[in-house]
Image (tube, rainbow, N blue to C red; front, top):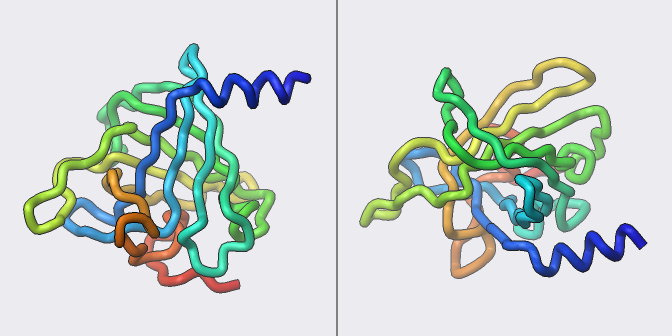
Length: 168
């Protein structure tokens, strides 16, 4: 019954969808993109959509988080937005002992006339494996998503900085 209530509320929630750009000063997109829904009271849930990722064993991973403000004390992406946990490592790589946590500004970066992302990073992810820090990745948020409107991904999922198509 509770699950049905949550699903019913989800249909009334406000949706936000953004592509993960590979770098400010570039034009590339990772193959995954975020789809988040606002549930009120600073609560967010959604998915990390993997439908444009080659070799992805599933179509998406679960995401849930809350509204937050990240101070400008070092992270490439900071300001007001949403922090969420993402099960992408379990869904994409089968690693249940890993965590991907993302901060997103929920606002697209501006794009120059030549198609280059400008401004500061709009998202940053941090990885943890088996209780240890695993690294970070960051980039601009795009109003375009991979696989739609002729926008092809140029890299695999954003859980890796230097990568091509994901292969198991």
